[in-house]
Amino acid sequence: MSLASAAPHPEPSPAFDAEGAADHLIARMEQVPTSRWFVVARVVMGSATFFDAFNALSIAFVIPVLAPLWHITPPEIGILIGASYVGQIVGAFAFSWGAERYGRIPCAAAATAIYAVLSLACAAAWSFNVLLTLRFIQGIGVGGEMPVAATYISELSKARGRGRFFLLYEMIFPIGLMVTGQVGAVLVPLMGWQIMFVIGGIPGLVIALILLRLPESPRWLIGKGRLAAAEAVVRRLEAASGKSDTVDAALPLASLPAQVEVPTRSRGRWSELLSPAYRGRTLIAWVLWASVFLVANGLNNWMPTLYTTVYHLDLPQALRAASMTNVAQVGLVLICALVIDRTGRKYWMMGAFGLGAVTLGILGLGGTHDISWFIVLSTLSYGLIGSIAAVVYLYTPEIYPTRMRAVGTGVATSWLRVASAIGPTMIGFMLGKGGGVDAVFLMFAAVAIVGLIAATRMIETRNLRLEEISR
Image (cartoon, rainbow, N blue to C red; front, side, top):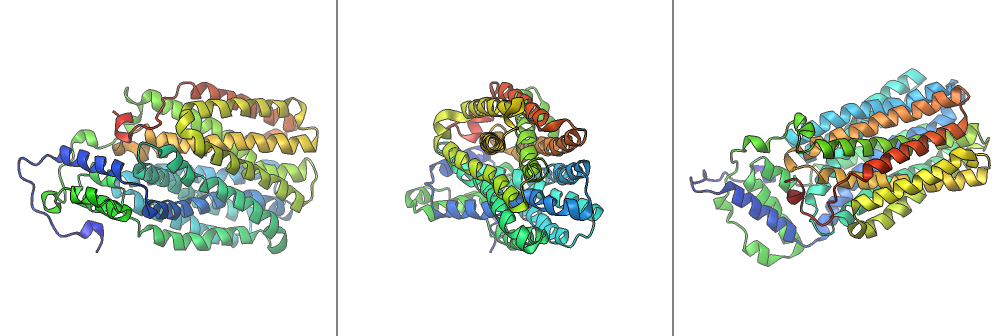
């Protein structure tokens, strides 16, 4: 029997304190020890995120093969990369809205199914225009999964140690990018470009079905007034942790209504993101997202092609060199996960943006002339900026209340998509017009400085309950 289909409960008495019951449920969630159940939830949702990353980056390891095969020009490469990100903007808005209305789990599963099916369709593409169209549609699923998944994991997390808990989940995304690089470097030369899309599609369909077996976010259920369903999930978490004393102290199920009226103030609105209470947080978050991903995804998507066209490495060498950027990101995100609850979100971002601006600036001022220095500095730059990409996924769901957390995160990630569509396209036109690689990296350094300035205006959220941050 599903949690939502539990036996009906009696109507609450006039004296029923819905707000007190909700606070009691939240307090119990904060007291539940981390158990195997949390690990399973993180792995299942993380698996969807893994293949989200795989599908997002797969095009970078396909283009070096397709560019000469289909006679694709540098500006067209930028457009092909950007098409997915335009679709991701649509997905981020649509699925974040759906997650507030219909729940986190069904929307995460639907987004995963979309990107998996379209990945298989991309493997059958026979021309540039067909692949362009399919990548746009696939982007809707890719863009919808990540903000909903990040919201769900954030809502399962407790105040103390939330940074480490979340970033250990978030590491799955750069691991997905890293595996994409290694798989692309080995299998594309052996089996052809279609293999990337096949690998990105079949497991995704299985994961979409498994996602539907996860329980809904208790915080979302509470926000919708579904207290009995939320109580059932909290009891499940307590039972999995063996915290019998908490279970014994739980509210009697019979005292909780299946549905209580939700006050108007508990219903999130898009316009609230720019209300006086949240405008400052929202604008800073948008700048952070745009800055980090213009650099990160510009590098990620163009590195294999730069190695083959500018430095004239053969395909296997180019793909191996490009894949090292994601190895660096995984290492730095792991370090970040271990220290983020000590350093805080703000100071990690300031440090990484600052160091990234320095290494990118060195490249822009002549560091691109030597291939060895280029590999070292570009890999380090991506690792630093890529660690911020993980932290911004942690930070954004924290700064909004439950009623607008998915919407706030989804709209913020839309700036990721805008920047990721603009960045690769700009690089294509800069290289096509003879601007050179130096100019590209000077642009990246300037964007990192903008991100550093925005990071100085962040609020600190470490070790605070989500309900405390959003008051």
